[in-house]
Length: 213
Length: 276
Image (tube, rainbow over all chains, first blue to last red; front, side):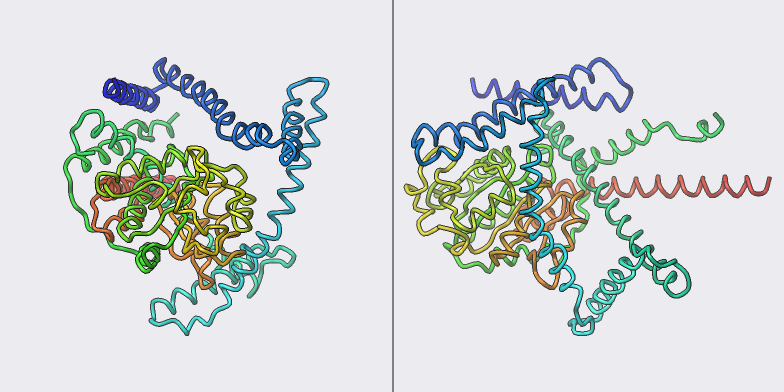
């Protein structure tokens, strides 16, 4: 029986993959049905998953086991219910309080972490002696790191007109930015092709058995 | 209208890319794969960790990123088992739990003596991202009192003495976004000084690479399918990442040819227009 469901799962997976791919030719009913089934299934799945993996283990079970020690968990539960009141036309203002609470708390918690990790540590990592590296490739790399960081930051300084030596430095910064955008595009292309490879490995391997899987 | 006529029907591009990916998967080319320093650093982090050390592998992705992250995660888990490291699986993404279980199931035949609760444990998913990691650093047992099956961690030998990050050798996050590797860097490394490393999707690699720096916020990084293929090479395992790299390279070549052709055509057209 398990074997039957495995095979059924693979055939359904193959059908929906091809149905979604068919959109590349043109919009069609197979694509539309597959898309809507995907959206509906995802919503239903996440709803049940949230109940079983968040609400039951983190709220209901602790309250049931020892209410006295865990009553504090009612606070986030109430905040959660208040957030759902957004659906009521007359009571939707109530949802602003939990939203404000969560945004404020998250900002407060994250602020110091970001300052430390993304500002101080990153700045410290750039304040290096480029010539201390072991070989000439690393030396060039570290010089580029320092020059790229400084010129890139200068490009984003808009309180002074970009002209003369300042303008030239900012222009060098643009080149570094363009290279980084190019690298980001390259990585994105690789990621998208990887997803296609994953689907084709499934179709050619698991479904058709042409390649080993 | 005349402009539109000059454009190639994009379905030809889709078909070419499709064939460029499918054919190398069937007819293997075997293009060479060179190992980058970033990937080697991750490998060496695992390799140089003493046997029986406890490590955290956080599965912070879902099936949408499986083609990229699953091969690298499988390679790292395999190396950890080979080195007799004790793995504590966690997940900041709900579906990460199943991703970790799937990899353990795949490796069970290769490591028949592995025992759940002794060699590895899956603590499951916990919502909260950065806050969860911070709380784990203070008191891991309070955040994960049970494993994913509901078994108390007091009953699991692997969890003996694990109260926070002090007894953990390193953490590796396989991350598809937020929450993920960024939060592990910000909290586990920058707050608790825990060695942190990981693997990310190609899309998020440029944003995470700056953490591989002189401060060693990240000890190496496996980026995308290429990084996964490099890792498979290091552990001498031919997996799905290695088999996908021929297709990846050919697809990139096709994209480059399309970009060059389009730009040359554009340049010629512009020149002709100027002459007129």
